[in-house]
Image 1: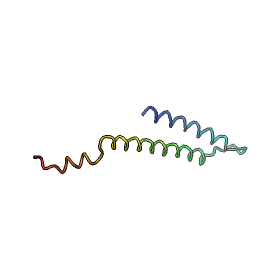
Image 2: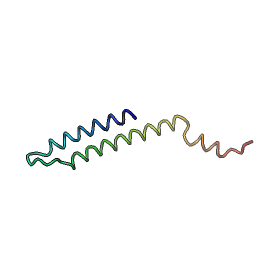
Image 3: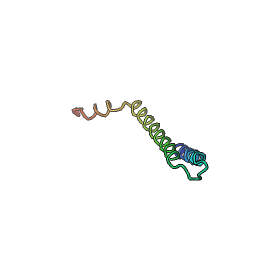
Image 4: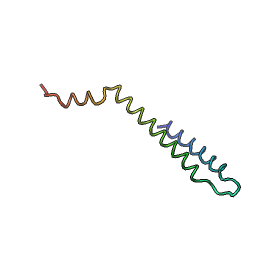
Length: 75
């Protein structure tokens, strides 16, 4: 959880900086670019957590073990 928060804070700051740089001479903050970059960071982190969770499930036996217990006759 600590890594997730640190990564999102880092990318929020980076996205904010890019939004400021992309604002140009007109002085308006570029919310589309900053929000898009931060959105990509969030999606990437969620994908990383999903892959990590699925690897743990596979390492523990996944659905096969659970189904075999459910289908047991109890004898």
